[in-house]
Image (tube, rainbow, N blue to C red; front, side, top):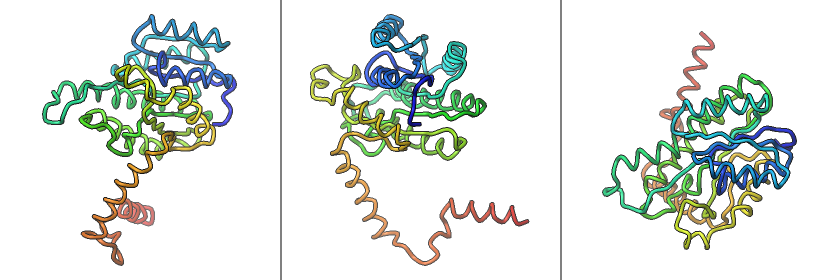
Length: 274
């Protein structure tokens, strides 16, 4: 989707950080913005700042862990503007650093409720409505560099949520109609309110990150990336996997005999020819 003029863009967690930066960027392109987040005072502050920039925006309180509230966000958005063109599933959270064996299960469940199920709710609820609407649209899910490798020591729960968002978003891309674009946004270390303030002084400026991301969104890319050094981490993981396969599961003629996609394709072909 190259042109956002008069498009309606809904952003969860859009009152601060990356979400608010996306609100400014889409709004600068002529979009109308709806932001949903937990705290009304922060939402009002965001709307006021957007208004100062000449951006038309509305807000509603939304807890993405509650599907009925995500449904209400969709209702609010369609009622406010008559249509929706883009959903950015951005709301997220982090946990304090801790090893796997010491992380309370309730903490793991809590972060999954926001970072994964929140994205699932937004993808499913808005995806259904965008499909029914039948016009060009887009779903952008905020993953992380941690969707592609493990970048946070003692952060397994957070990293696991972002790996899960990758799987969800790749599946979604295959399943929605062609008129709905899907993208996975993979921020690296970007300034936000999620981490300690002293650490955030070393992070990439939020607006700089979003300007890099918007170029890729307009180009229709699926993997929306930013931090150049990430490729070193990705290559290290890829090389280790390639070495394992070359050593213990090397290619051979007919080796698609147990490949699930190949098998499913052959089974479907048999059904079609029956």
